[in-house]
Image (cartoon, rainbow, N blue to C red; front, top):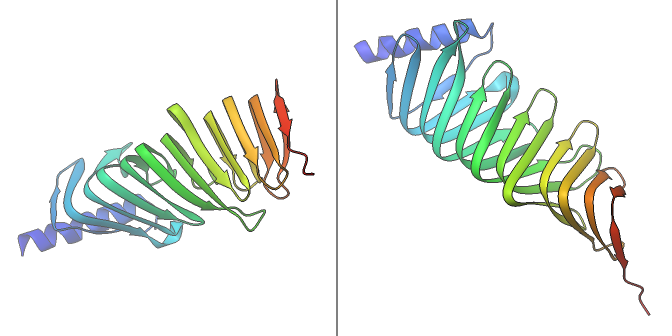
Length: 210
């Protein structure tokens, strides 16, 4: 009974602190404290207002500026958001700003708004801003990105889903199978609506079919 009362009280505090945003949290075990709460075992977070679902083995939510905001998830973490999903082995996320970073072995699928394609991403770090549909990735080796007939690797990328623009930078290697071209460049910008591209310091190979 004491545990149940503590959980209800914590849920009320969390809801109130987020100004009407209701955060539903389920787990096998929870330890609420004054400034943080620890969850372990089949953790599931649902936020209907943000169209967000999060699952992980362990999670801590901490107060920031007197509000329950900062999420730290560890273990295989799955995030499902409006327009896509991502998997990683760690996550830092702000419930109020809807900004965060997925870390270690990140894979993501994001449905592009300007085309019928799904953008597939693999990287070491993926910064997200769900309120602005912005995604920024980095890898010590190479990030990997696929959209339709385009496959590319680079050191970094940014993807503005709302604007429909992908920017690749750092030792970019890109293949467009529809256009039969290969591009090596310092940077490449792709408009996702029609796959129109611009590149800097580029070397282009074109395959002419006989």
